[in-house]
Image (cartoon, rainbow, N blue to C red; front, side, top):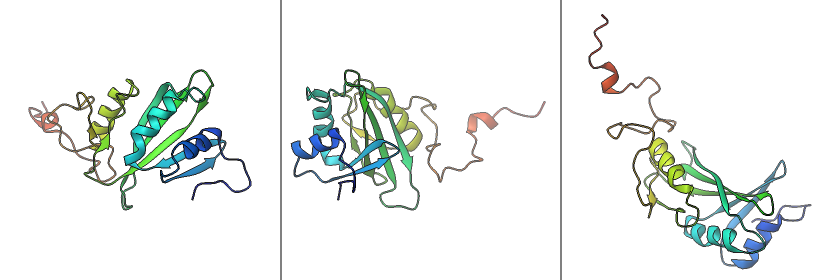
Length: 168
């Protein structure tokens, strides 16, 4: 599992594989972009290494999002896009998460993860263990459900939307 046939493995992927020989992960290459599919248990130590290793310095988390793969198990993927400002390189990390499973928060590593993790929580219902202030960020606190889940009813409207509308 892991190596791309016919091509040299991405430098970052090679360094991660060398640094964490017991970590189980796979590498995917598509359109000159590298994705590391890692385990949730390895997330924090790999992210900290990516940020702190002098040869990598992934010091900016440009994005963190999720994908609902309704019908698959695990159901969700949490996707991280760290970027190295010094080396002008990016890598994509993915972890697979089952519904109800918490993910370690990467806010201690990249402060920018704070609002990204809150958005993923708000839209998908994925909890981030150790997050300093995990609460809704886009939807009202009393909102029911998670709008970016594939099983969220498309025609759902909040109670406050319907209350008080008499058609006058």
